[in-house]
Length: 299
Image: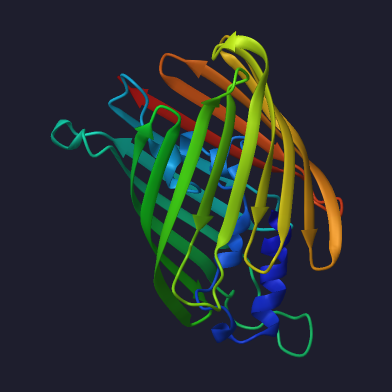
């Protein structure tokens, strides 16, 4: 989704700071914290961030902490980090799982120019933060639901703005003999009609295998981002023992054009930890972006 980051640079230079209610929101269309998953299925470093329902802890799990950071090529100068945590306190266990998420994204080296390409003064700061508090629970055998309150703030030049958003998500799992999953969630839903939220949908099913340690699943993810940009992501998700691989082609429809690129994630599961490395292609011959994440589950 780095096409949105590049578009954001042009937007900042060409428009007034008031054109976006919270500056830097476009930077959050990158799949931060996602290890090759569809956004509505995001667990691990993104557990509860893109879909509040995915923060829920499984049977026997007492807590989970995770973090991820992306490394973009110098052409993009994009940085991003996300940290999430989930816990189920004994005194509140009947309510469900409580979660905390902190995400940051920024474009560095955004130079200030006037009538020619020569830079003037200091670089223009362009960044955004999201802090989320959520709750999720298994409401029935096949349904998990969650909700989150978010504080979103952004900074461009000398302008700052913040707002409160509320989001909800749901996951239907273990449906039919093929263990079909279906998920949906909103992202940064506010009362401001001019500031439309993102919408994420996903579905997948078991293709082969009989347990979580030896399985192949296939599915599709869909994200309609702010500004009507649409990402469609057909993917495969396989695991054999400690090794997992996810990925597929990503179709992006934005600004009247369609582009394709590849997304690939390799995961290593060991002793309650999951280490993930994600590679995502960029357009126009720009070097790929990499993301490294780690998740730890406490039992």
